Length: 215
Image (tube, rainbow, N blue to C red; front, side, top):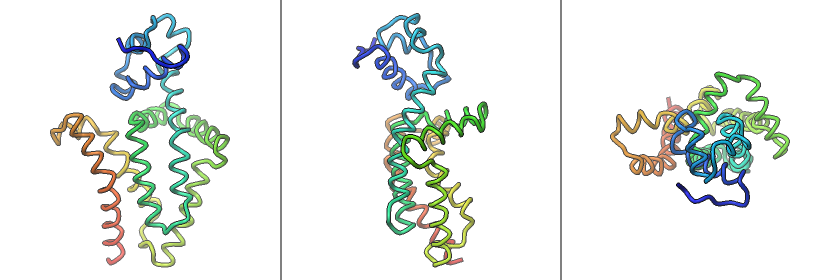
């Protein structure tokens, strides 16, 4: 059993759950595993958290609160638009490596909770940081449209460009088991693959924008 750390039982539970969720995802995690890792019994775990889903949502929201300021910093920075997009991709992939359970959780909650889930994130982040993701993206898209008019970006539909950027960052985390199987990578090799991804995703985007520009 892992040795509990932290100043309180609640914090020990969260720390243990975070480690196991990263390793196994929500679906593959059992409450008994979390209790064992936190050094408590299952009854005490349920005293603090009534369900695995409640615990996972709390950890997810805390991760979003940690991630968003770092992502926002890159998207609000005063720099050329291409540099801003490259910096965003690097920051986003770096943060997803710290919280690899986020993409799957978002998909699950969007399928089950829909608009209510998005509203919860918007309100939480707007209250915490002063700007919501919608506000940050609104400003970014205005900058991208301006850059297109000035010839800094090709006239590629912005909604598709942004979707492609997100896909470049998120897909490896959503498809990790498939990629490991098809590309014959163990966990160590996949981690090295993500090291490469941080740099090569931006390079790929630059090539795509350059090729599109000259068509």
